[in-house]
Amino acid sequence: MRGYVKGQITVFLSLLFTIIVSLLLTVIEGARVKAIRFQTECVADMAINSALAEYNRELFSQYDLLFIDTSYGMAQGRIQNTEAHIRTYMDANFNPQEDVIVYAARDWLKLQTQEVNILRAALASDNVGDCMMAQILTYMEGKVGVDVLKHYTADWAKLEEKKLLQSNVTSERNAVESQIDSIGLPQKQIGDEVWEEVPLDNPADAVNATRGGILSLVTERGTLSSESVSLDNYASHRKLNKGTGLSEVNAPDNDMTHELILGEYLLEKCGRYGAALDKGKLQYQIEYILAGKSNDIDNLQTVVKKLLLIREASNMMYLLSDSVKMAEAEALALSLTAVMMLPELAEPVKYSIVFAWAYAESVNDVKILLDGGRVPIVKNSGCWHTALSNLTTYQLHLKSGESSQNGLSYQDYIRLMLLTINHNTKMLRFMDIVEMDIRQTRGNTQFRIDCCMDDLEIKAVVVSAYGYQCDITRRYGYYQ
Image (cartoon, rainbow, N blue to C red):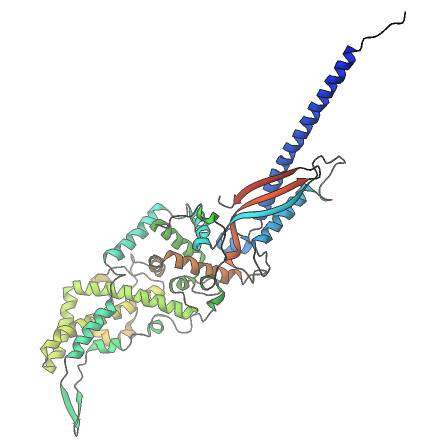
């Protein structure tokens, strides 16, 4: 009888093998999907970091600011340029060429970048420089001590307490001059039916005649910069590109401390009178931030006039508190008006002399400051330089006194003056300075601060030759 072999085990193993193979293929396919996701994430991270590494070198070298210049040295900066760079880096990492050792093995993923879109981006100029301000604060962290900030705050508080920034010395002086003019002076006949006023010989008139030419009195002839620019194509005078929302995320609060820190940064990175930088298009850059004029002379003149008003208000305040000097002015006014037999003129003439005296001393103060000396915010008799007897010839006695040991320097005064400028105005004018300087460097002739990117969020779509697609969103920034 022929024997038979039962087949139950063979069928069982066949069914089991099918299940095992299906399981293995499922696991392999799941691994492929996970590998696609993982490789896409790694490649995207490397590509974005590579794009961030393309920060503008001159901007970092001169201002310690990190931004991608989306023009890449070309005429037009566009976010799409950075998208193209990121895609190029992703494709290079998905498909390494001869510079990478590739082993002869099957590519189980076969990935390529289908598209890269920057969903959101923060530009340097967004919200009048929020990203720039955030980077500045990070850079300056630890460079300006708490004690230094307290000292600057105390100087500012003294200006505020004395109301030196709000005092309108000019209008007060004009009121006194108008009072004098309203009182007619005696007249003498100099010909047939020809009369003229008898001159009062008020020394204040001689001082008032010199008002206006302040810059020539306080600076050395031939030393001033004659640089000028056309502002039409700079950030503060043109319509700026805008990012897409990321700049608001870490926008700093521009409080008093932050404004002081910003001032320190500007003084470190920008030139000024007496400390011009070779890199600067304009030599008096801090003065430009304070005044916003198109040339160095006008910027310095505007700042000097503001400084003169501060000193004039302070010196006027001191004179009014000094009984000895007020008595000198009164005695001189009485002697002048007694000859005219106009006693009602004595009081306004006295104050006109005091105003002129304060002005002459203030011109002397400004000259000391521009020559590198120091002048206290509020004076006393020990540091007063101008004698009443020299009032009519005060220009010949400028800087006759010594610089104060404990006073403020020109840099200290402009540091305080920066606090009087609106934050947005300061940032826009600083952007102008940055553009002026960077455009002078090789390969950056078309540089625009509103084409510089700080923070970006991308969406990349990656496809596999095996029919899979992976979408990934990533956000990166220099200080994120």
